Length: 234
Image 1: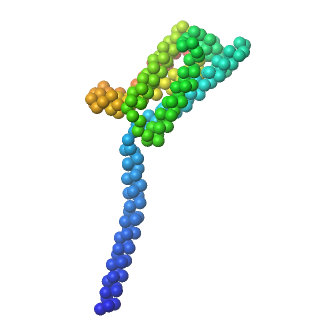
Image 2: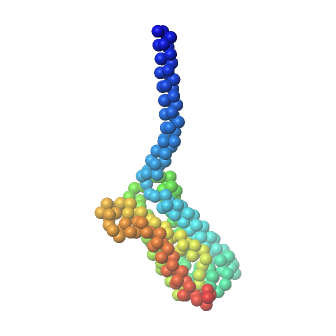
């Protein structure tokens, strides 16, 4: 009888051990999966916004910084030829010495030198899953809207008044456009203007198809460039 009881206890212990080991093996993948799901659904802006802000901010800052250095070199040496002055159309020196290049009394690239680091910081915070408050996104949208409007004014000035293109300036143009559209889409559709705005049909379209609006804007700018200098490209 005692031997039978010991065998029963051992069998129970072995069954419990097998069940425990099975739970450990089964739980590991599930735990990882669940953690991934929680991470993906964590509060904050979407990862695509973080990538666009970070990459666009870095490229925009490089373009603005190089333009600032080139402008300083021109001020120090009147005979200095910027590295982006290639021919009669791609002519940075013509653009940088124009009145439009210093709208506020100082070189325009300085705006980008100070603004793009904030864009980069915001992108890094988004990628780190930091939930920024609505007031921050509203003011950030104000800044990106100003950036797009300013670029939208500079483009026709460069094409039809100055009659020259600056490659580094075009890098900044190319960065500001997706930064604006992605920020606008998230701020509207993300509920930072309120749930009523977020539920609007037009807002839902912008929130889903912001990348199409970005491509359309690129197409418009490219068309303007090609038609302004047809003899150069055709």
